[in-house]
Image: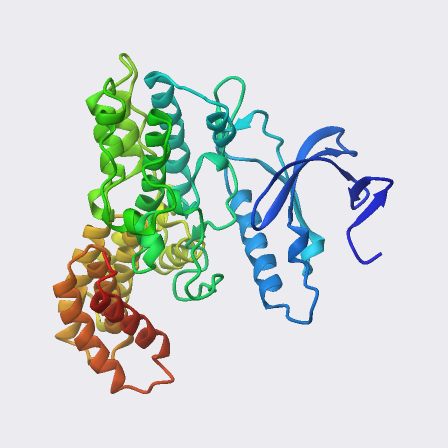
Length: 453
């Protein structure tokens, strides 16, 4: 047989090892099964691509896209090291839809969606406990950085002891491979996720997907846990423009500090939301008397040993960290190198500029948008005085500057920057700058139609 599975009566067995016993859940992309590992004699969970995605005709584009997305999810999950995230035991990542699957830890319990549907009513203390666990999980994933993009009650498992696990990273965004080489895995105009929990920038696709995107979804979940209803129910216009009904009107006994956290998380603009999951966690800990704030994550230098490694070696390590998506460690590495390169010979001055650009990209990917904008603007000012307008690094920094201005809602400055950049790109060889011209045109069109922000 060409497939990895075979039927034994009504039982499906993958690679003569994993028995698929009970279907636990089905989504648009995949199915999750309670299964049994014959070799290790333990229960597991198996995720497969939904059978209706198996191509019937010769058109394989959509199927190939799903397989690649599935592979990416497996590699993302393999990098997790947190008790609130699923453990990946095994994966079969072939080229055919029917031949790919993941074997993961079988998480006991029900989804928050199922519990809410069954009339779950939580105390404020229970909601705070769930929020604190979510913050700890998101702080871990965002440091990689991985953005879930589809956080909702259906993707949160609750064990009998109250421990939560975030599942289904099928549409997660990651910086692995770096922004300049990432493959687009969504079709133009496609909205990924469930509308009731999507941030405004996901609906209009004009903003950056950053950690604050997941914090918005968390705000929606906490709002629903406190009131019994999400702030918006599949209403695109309301998500984009309307504030939610104030929490205190629906639950008058809510603690003002908890209400403030949820309200800030639901801000339309990313820069008005909390700066990080860890910051939300620290604020929520004030609602638990005697609790100590979570310790800050220690960021180790890429170098080791008694003294610093040679600069070329450290520069290579920083680039490897950046390309692998480890922005939390790449940022201090690039920042230190930029200082060491500054004021040196022209070749090292060029490397200093590259390090500053990469450091700004790290900040952008980690959600520090204002700091990233300031760094890109400073870099543009300096490069413009010593390099031609067509310099690749200068063009890259200007493009990031315009994108950040759009994301932060400064449409006047964004229009000025992007219009000038658009005229410049039109004067350059089109085949070399097709991507940049497409991005600039996209942003300008969205600003003119009033959708950005």
